[in-house]
Image 1: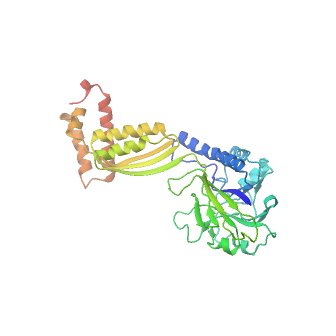
Image 2: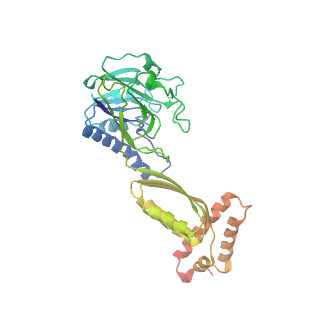
Image 3: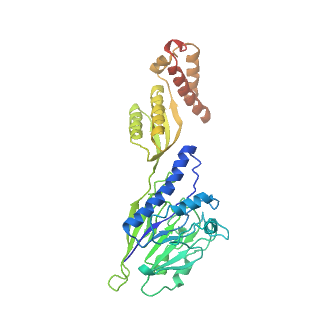
Length: 385
């Protein structure tokens, strides 16, 4: 029996530029923490090897410190690590991998495969057919040589590659590097371990994407896993049996993307209840649209501010929310008459006018919320009348 962990798309060194610096720092650090978690899982499960199917690093230009830290994170598992360059860290003549070699930080149990070929794991009688990317984008199937490549008798054949399986990943693929959908069959593979798609995905019973170990996008494609793969003994009794694949969650952060429409007050309550369920392992991107009274819009703002202090990272877009003050709102602001009442009426008119520029509508809603906030922070006797 052969047992290994299949993982990919660590993209160590990702910057997370869409977030605030403190948020980005935590998200980047989690990628190292989860590599250490993979090492611990590999040791606990006593696997024969860990296969990393490309894009270990996000950029060729990551710092020397990042390189050293990555290889240091592997120390929890003393068995073989097989690492394949992908499109983000292709095996160029001068690459992040050649820098790692010069830094002398690659441990003896870590095998970086820089050229196409076969890596033999004699202890478990496994032949790894490896197709590293030697440039960022290719238009030929780098796994084509698998079909003609012979391996020792009695050794199980496992493919390791990075790219897009034809006809499977047509929407949102990370690169154009093609892989034939029939490769596992034509190359007589017991298993084909792939990287490039950031969620774990079964292509067929012998072909799997592991996905990224730590979620990095607002996409519901089941990231944050490694695959625990078991291949039975090579014998006439079970020759050709499909591998047993178990997804194992290792990622820390859960990313959510919500599009919320406010039509009635209960929609506000429902949003606040959902926000209250989030904690420090959540990353949220929320867009709020619809129409609501000023007091309810303020309560949404307060709930979002409280959520920001509780979750790991938060991106908010309320540009689609129209804020229409009620008579009670105006009374609470002291804006029933006078100059302030005229300002509020003008802002409300901009939102209700179908001819208004969308940017004006957005600014009008923001101005009403700011006005409400400033007015409520003033002593009652100092509010405009």
